[in-house]
Figure (cartoon, rainbow, N blue to C red):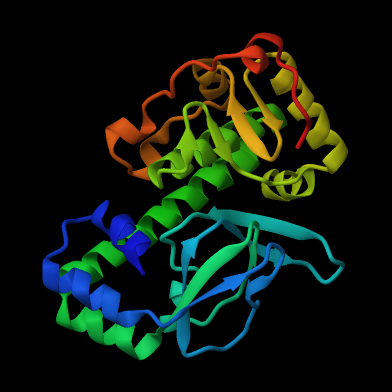
Length: 257
């Protein structure tokens, strides 16, 4: 069941058969949750960590006046609240799509990390990559234009979903609404809508039927000043996708996010 976590960890170091078995033994029964459900509550105490097996989710903070900042998107194989082991959580996680999740008792995870140092190293490195992504977002929010921030986010999500085997050519399912995207890049929905129209008009990227379509990877990556090295994925994963084909690629006609 936790095969996604194994795949994620093995991007950061080879695991032995015993280490894989230790991961398999940690997770409890899987459960399905609908899109929009709260997976992790801000400040909520728990003795378990939550593993995302399938689906997509997003991490966020909400201000007292209701304004929300999305801090990152989660893909299958992520541990949504690893810091509970040491710090508790000071953020929320909400399901972007319907998700399949499983609880991992913190005590079992701690024991596995002590007994299997390579597993601890892989989990630690996975956590460092999350921090690398956060730094990249911070630079974008502080120094990039709105156009570049949106282009960069679309590049990142396509590459990360491709690493999970969830892309089809130049397409991937990323059903973020304009509200989600605006909250991720720090824009109003009006401004975000304008940027999406510009990207579509430039035939760089577009949304159609809750899918992200990459129409011109080279152009989109240049627009976002995107260099996927900060994701620390295999080179084949961050390589450009094949050129878009078909009527959508030629005309740019699509629905908006």
